View 1: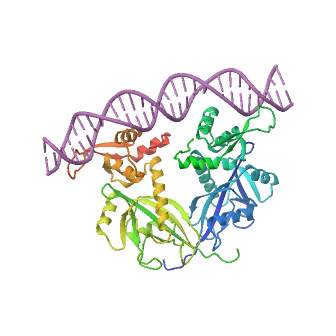
View 2: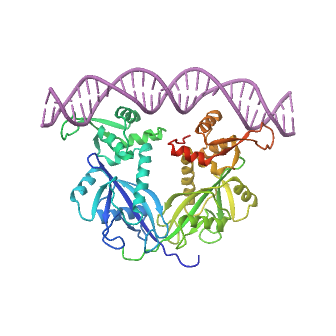
View 3: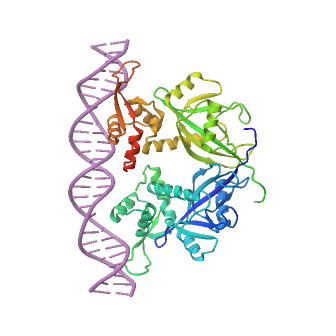
Length: 228
Length: 228
DNA sequence: GCAAAAGTGTTGGCCCTACACCCATGC
DNA sequence: GCATGGGTGTAGGGCCAACACTTTTGC
């Protein structure tokens, strides 16, 4: 291997948002350059020479979509030669979670270049981004079962049913309401507030809950492990 | 970001081997170039321009240690600026598992440049390789609980006690012999042969077992999930 | 009053853990 | 015969899944 290396390093991010109306959704951008010009793709781009990988993700998200996220985790690195038709590019992928306020704003603006897509209605994508989303979704599905990452997708205060619907949307299966609540409450890191849900339409309004992160860390240190 | 990117892409591998005598061990090389000349480090090196990441790992392992492995999985990508004192280098790390025959040969040769180290007796290492080994060990610990990767570290036929000791070495805790056997046998992918263990020293010789991978795949398709 | 969503308990079965004695072999 | 490691079963408890009716609200 005496020839000098000529490989580019990029980051790409699968950003998930959730509301009970829209379901689990992914943030995509419309490319304005070749290749795949005008095709949908994951936000991302080349890493700066003196920039950490996480910083690169946050910067690209800011530049391309205007959002900043509150949970970010490395997913996988894709490096097969030929995955970018022009250069050799290795992409280090991340997945991120945003709270509904961020999600809603951008779902409304509906700018031509950035949009949220329900996880079940992803359009054809540039490069191998389709398989990156599948990997991210798989990771989220398993992660949510043993770490309380779901709360990163909800408002600070939320009715219990939101949490339940979130789990159903992410895992794509039904969950028994009573058993689920017993399980979550038993852990002891959820706080019930006295506030009631603001309703839209009929139905009995529920109490709002809050995730107590410090309590969770404490419990975790004591060896309690979260598992749905 | 108009300046052109100047980042190198490397792969590094944490290769695990196991025997009940030596315990869980990691393959290291002694560096013959700066930086960290004569220091111990993980095998690895730069990725070729037209080479897949997995191929690069296999090639480096062959070049630096002479071994080829039978299980390889991507671990994590490390990219903090400054982790290599000279250039910006992003390392995509893998962990691999080898069977005891490979392990034993190299444990004997004891060449100056390549050696196996018990997981609890790793010397100081170059770069951030210490933390890479910790990450790999953590991954192995959790992986072995929900996928039958342990068999990749054993001979094709092995006495049951080997499997049990392997789990104890990897997880670094005691395991109840009877409960463990019940659990494993219940899955139905382990075949008991009529052959007996060849003894070294006293003790009742045990039957040899074999992992039936096809059976495992079948069972997995039927939705059975392995969990220790 | 009716439609919509929230709140709530019990039971049966399964699984998991804890635990100890006898057997086959080498020396 | 003794030391070493292999082989095996049961009982109790905890946890989990299955399951339906009542309450509060908007309209």
